[in-house]
Amino acid sequence: MVAQTVFADSVRLAQLGTTATVQIISSTSTAIIRWAVPEMRVGLPGTNDDALFFLTARSLGEAQFTTPIIASTTIDGRYTTPIPLGAVDGLYDIGIKTHQHLTKVLRNVPLDGTERVLNFTQQDYSVPVKGLEVLVAGDINGLMTIPSQMGDDKINAIDVTSLLAQFNVQEKYARPNLNQDGKVNALDMTIILKNFNRLGDR
Image 1 (cartoon, rainbow, N blue to C red):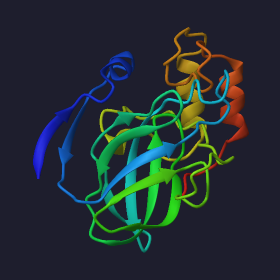
Image 2: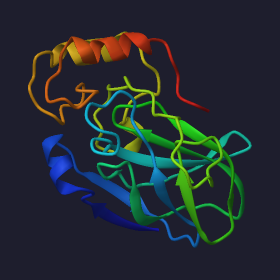
Image 3: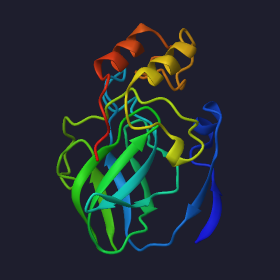
Image 4: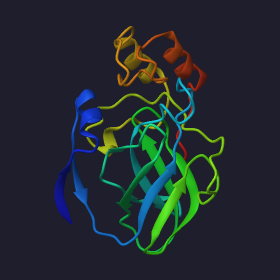
């Protein structure tokens, strides 16, 4: 295990006031993201879908590995740099957790030392077509310096408080600006209230 500081998408991380010090674990299994689409973003589809994220791998319901890298998908919701998955071969539930969204899990993904292409817009990870599944928005608490602090995977009063603390801030990448229209306002609050009490996939 080798410690390494990763500046994943340095512009985005600088705007959000954080960098990530991570542990890199060697593994032959890797993953890339075909699509992971946040809900209710403004603009044309595939033009405003970027998000900071990390991945988790679970076997039999137990967390086996959390990717130590905080990275950013592109504006079309993709990430094409192979991500090492530090897990032995087998079937895993692979989850994506972003800085604004609940964990979304793809079930029974085989890891066998090769690269997996993950499509979080479908229930079947391997379908090569963009589907209708989206990342549920509203989990915006936490410091976000490391994966374990990037939200608590529930949408509740803490997230409402976080949004109110930045209400009327005009900044596209302000964390409570859930629809990424450039300002934190009632539209973002509506998204939180729509998803209130929801929990991330387990």
